[in-house]
Image (cartoon, rainbow, N blue to C red):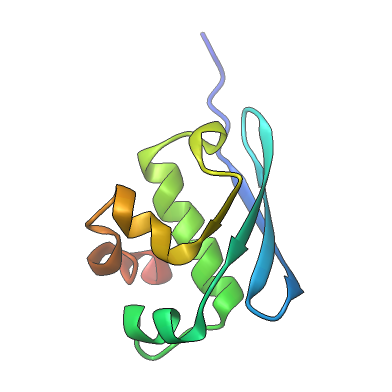
Amino acid sequence: MGKTVMPNIEVVETSPNSFSVTVHGQHVTVHQVSVKPEYAQALIQPQPALAALVSASFAFLLDHESNSSILRSFDLSVIERYFPEYPKAIARYFSS
């Protein structure tokens, strides 16, 4: 039987509104993510810290695909292009 590895998400702010995200799952992947503050504000209220939003967004993505399938570099707003339910679903990832 294969062992299931629950991914661990590590978010580090590299510059204002930009983050390096390392996902430790079956494979370790590193992603560069940018967040426009006005997008974050429109996405969820009250606005969480951007790093928390990035972490929650990766939890959402990992529920839909493996970390090796996630783009290596993207703006957070790109997620809803692939997953239209993202804006409505993201709030649930803060209460879990």
